Image (cartoon, rainbow, N blue to C red; front, side):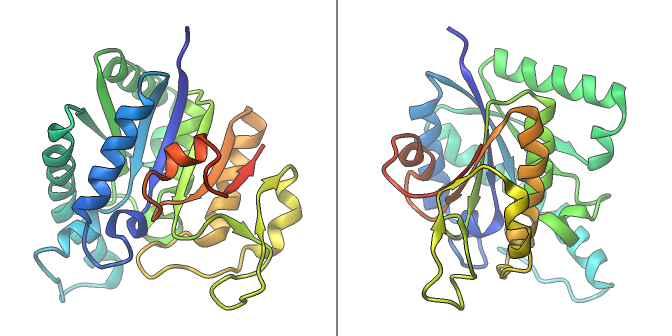
Length: 252
């Protein structure tokens, strides 16, 4: 039976558990979920966290703000992969790294090469770990915390589902961080009806906020890809969402 293909996007706030450093406990939680899901699903991870990984060890003070962040990403990317490898090895999960930029989704040959590489990793039992190449691209640093990259990846790989792990339970009718009466929107059919929410809060480590998640949904919907916005801080968030044990936003 054909496995369901899922792209799971892990933002910096999820990986750091709201701190300034990568959480080993959260990586272990993610590894346990992958092992529970992989029997019936093909899983691709789109991960942020390179800059947060660098901050385990250093702070850079020289250079313009974007240049500093790109340099931190260059320093932190191998550190981030080492964190993943150390933790995932304990759970017998083999990983392969793919660094992409948005330009890779515009060139036909690059798209074919990306699909071939990722499909080959999956066929050989490796978990693809995708991150934006922040040392040459600034889109994630400026705009999206990999939400758009995850959506482009889901479309390119013909995924069935994209899970965006966020720092809140999903899409609300108002900013829950400033409005205690804000209500969670659990099912969305017409994403355009919620464009007015795009000016919502932006987390301190992530850069996407609601705007980038709405943009991701608008990429997924025409391609028949369901999108979930789930609280990544919840232990077992993806598994619990699958089992309907937690509330989250589903965009169909």
